[in-house]
Image (cartoon, rainbow, N blue to C red; front, side):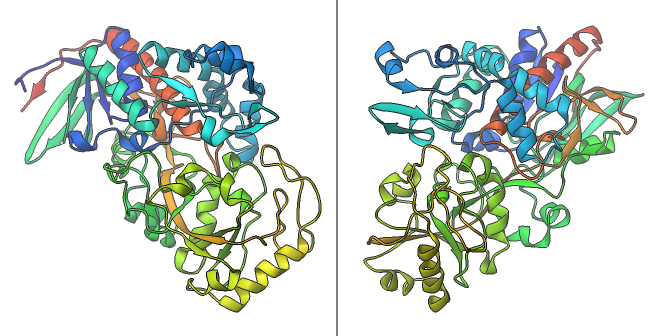
Length: 504
């Protein structure tokens, strides 16, 4: 590493949002340095662990084919692709966040989503149809549902591989095992960062800084402080390096924290999943997302949510919290042989933990639960199931009557053996608390004025997600606000150039 280098812009973090920011800034002509706290073999942040589903507004299959370009005419002929336009996307965000999402931030995310996907494709990111998780075959057609038909090729692994490759092609410097620890200011302007490399601390001067190093979900102490004591027990599904450093640095420099600090994206994940993301087993393989077709019971043998309240895209990010509230932080997803063939692929992986019994008695005897209540709950559920057509491709209204809570869709009796129980616990993906950021990616101070030279993207943008989120929106938000923050920061840096150097 040279003793002196000049950078217009420093990007803190190296996930999807950070690299989109770096690439976007490089397009504007900025000299860019990316700082990654972890070692090279653990690079990519939470984005490395994603399943790759990315929510985008589109108007028809022709739009989708602009980003999924290897789809043949023959394949397209048998696809039923419902439109999912900007208003649909915006209304979904507002519905699941109970109207608390900041309208300007949500609208920017929605309106820029398609053009950002096209931009990513232009930089080599490959997209494919989300056949496995968002479609069913019906009447010889492949029916898509849930507004989430696109995913990145080879999940988050493929996404990050291509973004790193493109960053390197563009001459963007990346320093690994380098933690940003403090933001520098000259007067009221950000002027660089202090970084720690092993025992060595140095100052990197730059005209602008983009913070894209995640929220605080990897920090047990902050989870306990902001979200609740029980969250110390949550599994961290992604990188262990998202510990809130960017938020604390920004606040020390005058930024305002913002968003739902008591909220987070959390899911039901395999009870025996690793305690932090395992870079040797990426790809979101431990989640268990076919629960709308199940009933979920805690170890007291009681149901605790309406499993069929909505498609999993709109409930999975909040049901992890409900599982964490249960005794022992555990629940069991119960399926019979009618439903077992419909489950998502993660249920068939060798990493999946499950119990199987030819009868319900045989199944329950393998579980550490209140056996009598467990069997009684299933008996009561079966008796409450109403007649009707069962259709997993739509909210079919096939429900129960007389239960608390009811199951309002996809209620099918559990009656055909063998029977299966998949134990799940809570895995936290990211925290909703971040910084106050405007729709151009500028970080704001307590007077709602831009903090000159400081920008943010990804999880660090507070105010978009509250309570819940529509599946695939986090990855899209990272890309949209990464691209925006990068271009805004580059234009700022290029018009406010200073002599930038590294001082050892």
